[in-house]
Length: 307
Length: 316
Image (cartoon, rainbow over all chains, first blue to last red; front, side, top):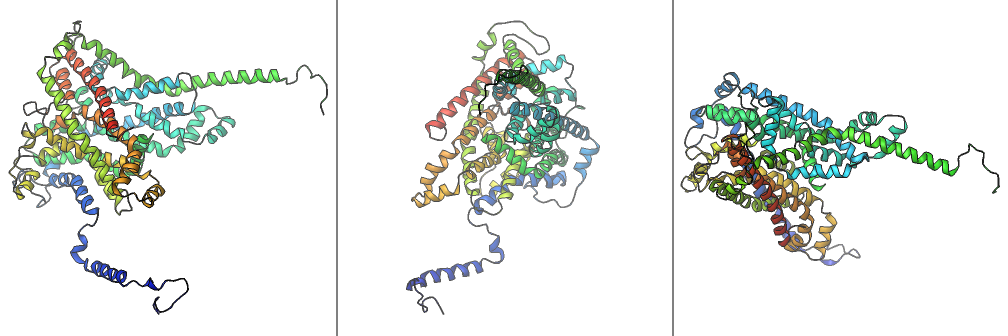
């Protein structure tokens, strides 16, 4: 009953190609042989991508592993790759006998304040630039975007002097105030609101809602995806900041976790597992936020680039 | 149906309608101005106030001998003429430039090639994207300390791997001739995921039909790449060049947490030098002058980078 024997009209005689048939059999056989450990070998582009992704992640895996190793295990040549047991000494030192918990709390206070403030101020400003035709809008928007070209390192010395005059140096206020709002946040929210359907807001206005009422009751609830993206980006940025806290904070009680970590290593030069535990605890919050909000984060950064 | 009845005195003439519309329009515009500035004002004042005022102030400082604590005296352009004779500034400037050149082409090419591998129906794309982005998310402080371990000459993993393939142990961050390259490698690792994700988003914007049409027209590998992929990703390449230049010229965090500019100033960068001048040696006036060098060299680098990319047909 093969195709060759049934000479159906319109079907050429040569439909059964022995060459093709043989190659298909060989392929099936080859696949069948790729059983057992052979199946673990990545094929095609995976052969490049898989090792590459391991190189990317391996330092973090080792970071977690070394935080439960003993100092002797870490300080061993050749290096220990897998801990022999769980050693809590590092975490104990970091959490009980150092200022680390306080630094962590400082970082939480700064990052959370900055995120809340940016969600409010950036969406208000972004909405104004996207929707309200006020005088000077275009000039102001250009000036805002131009600030992206001014490196913070150029303005850092006068910024230090400003906060010094305000008596905010060495307080968490010095870390919060410069980040209360941002040009990037305004830009992100403004481009989100531009793509937002106007009809809902107009309906709200006709129904007698004030502008602020429309913004609070209609626009903000629908802006949750953009707000989530802004919150994630702002949190990661605020949590990881090192340069400004390093300058604005001089007392070790007011350190953020990043500054603390940088000095921690100097104080505990031989306490390798404690340093590893500190690195792990410092990295955990941003990794958590990133893993939860990864899709929004990627959408936001690619969206911002494409404009 | 037209009648010649004159309208009553209080009827809606076209003129009165126009007048009402005009005044409503004026009221609306006034309201827009008030609302707009009420919404945007706080942000605008803060962002512009904390960038343009300090920018002008920094220029004023660069004309003084301020020691950060006191205002200092006006000394004209003495700081700027001292710049030219400062060997450390020359070192910091060259290091920053070398660092940019080491990282940028490799970063863009690596990102593009990997994005192209991911831009097909491939399994596990979510896993790869996450894995590549993790180093971009974690803080430079943590990563600096981590790579201090990994590149440790005596106990580090890298030397142990090199030893297995018969390469003698290297000094990495403690060797003046290797430290900057090592930092560029670490920096590549931190930025890689960002480049991949940005390029991948651009590649995914190319409609499948275009690629199929090109394939039917006989375009293969290189031809497709040159005539379809490269033109589509041009704007993104421009962005990544500018972004990469701004970022590498501000390179500081990893230096601070690994080498502190050493050994023998082999990893001192412009920003690290500015930080040292202003906040370690308290020569804020001179530091501000160096900061202006940073500002203008970033601008020039962006222009040169764009012109070069354009010549190579990669951008615009």
